[in-house]
Image 1 (cartoon, rainbow, N blue to C red):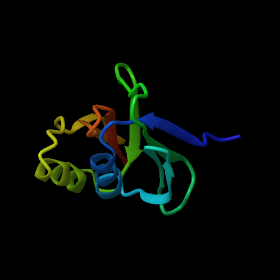
Image 2: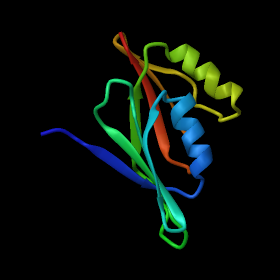
Image 3: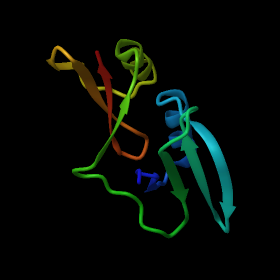
Image 4: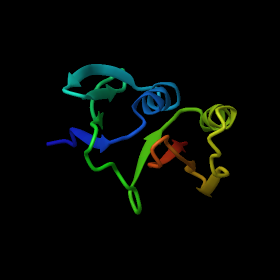
Length: 119
């Protein structure tokens, strides 16, 4: 058994797609029109866990307090600079031990995202 996907009810679909494609390096695997709304699935090149972004009028949107998503990157400094260049205000890079470094940023819908690099 493995974790298949996380579904996020979002208000800012296009901004979210830009964030997850450019910053997190995910690709759209499926895009479905659903009445007045839209559902978009994203995954990494190597497959695995997906993020499902659902944008539907008149449905409750995600309110994130106490929930975060963590993504691993091979070049944390480069990601930090990219996010700053997009005006997204990331936290400072933290180094809790000799094996890992990370920082936090919010996606366009206020979802807490951690980017981490393991050594």
